[in-house]
Length: 355
Length: 175
Ligand SMILES: [Zn+2]
Ligand SMILES: [Zn+2]
Image 1 (cartoon, rainbow over the protein chains, first blue to last red):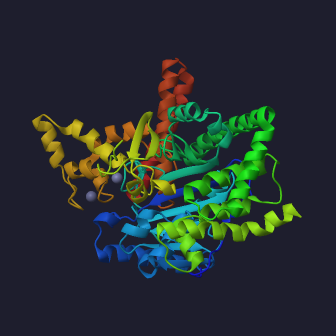
Image 2 (image 1 turned 90 degrees about the horizontal axis):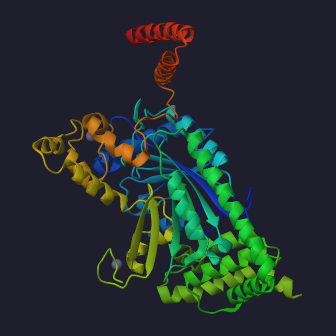
Image 3 (image 1 turned 120 degrees about the vertical axis):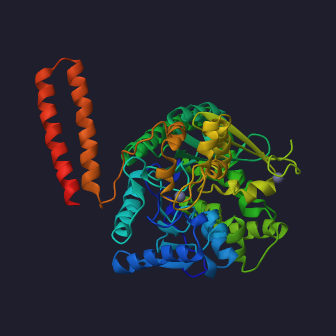
């Protein structure tokens, strides 16, 4: 990966099943190496030994790891690391707090293997749309490959052993990023999300002032990692996600029936603001992007695509914005730069619709 | 409302999480929220969970002399004590699981509703683990058959269990 260029990650493609409600599906599995303390208690030599074991194993599996690039956290600039965080490819923890931290990143950026994070290894796969099973297959494949050269810490009773007891067992955390504008607009979302806790799922939204979820984005993930098989965990999350999608679709249809004109107006206004505004916070941009996305998904706006909307979701974040600007920017300057970068990308679309 | 994290700034980021049926509300200022990376949909959804454990475990080990002894239990490999674990919410190494043994079980049950792994097994030693799982399944079936007074079925299961146990024992001797 060239550090000075922005490349799209696979999940941003906007493809995959249920892409009109599910932005991405992510799976990560936590693994540790037997005989080495977990990273936060490990010495420099020990975390270096983790790196060595992983790179030796990857080297021995040359064909499988051929399309991976390895980055040492220590070699990356703060900005480069934050860009990876904003693209959901590494965790903030790996970027900021790891010792001898590193990431093996597949060129399509669908798979990343985090080294010396909270656990020795975190194998992550992130795909566009509702593809939990596919993401699991990807991560599982690299788990098997790494196991050929690494002795995993495993206990018959507790499964894969992890630093945090919330990850022990399968070490599997699966999540979906959902766009739920209609459920949120019609205030059905709290009731729905409250019900999810009953089935061991965690819900996270981004809240601004008041109780509005910014950008109408919600992440749903499993909380339970022990006592269920990987298939059961994925099936639970998949089933619940399907139900949420169905309710969101019903709410969208109701919106369309009741207030088609208003929704259409709202989407086009949002597109206009994104295209012509000169000062914009990331919160405002997130909300506008959501309005445009809903318009697109309902067929009220054309000549735009999900790939662009996903790209915009990432480029409005601070580090990626600075990468594109080619210079460091304070918060106020970022609010000036943001609309410029958005406009640049929208130009071809908006011009097309005007002609 | 004041930020729960720094206790100084105005809280304008509200985060609701549901963890094991418990609703947790966080009120943070924007800076603390950013620091916590909550605005980034970060990987770790449970930054308060470590604190949550802390409280949970403290409750469990406060009080009697017996419980003070538990707090002093130490992992022979990494030297982490159970009391330290209960504060930071993280184990130090893979041997901690054996060292803290039954003290961990109630915690795991509370988090996961279970304390026994049923998922993927590494290829190394896979045969033995899977055989033991099968054995346990058969024993449960036997128990059920006996209760239902299906004695023929029970006899068949008992033979199967004996054969498997013998196999496992021999496998164990070879290793
Ligand atoms: Zn604060
Ligand atoms: Zn230990």
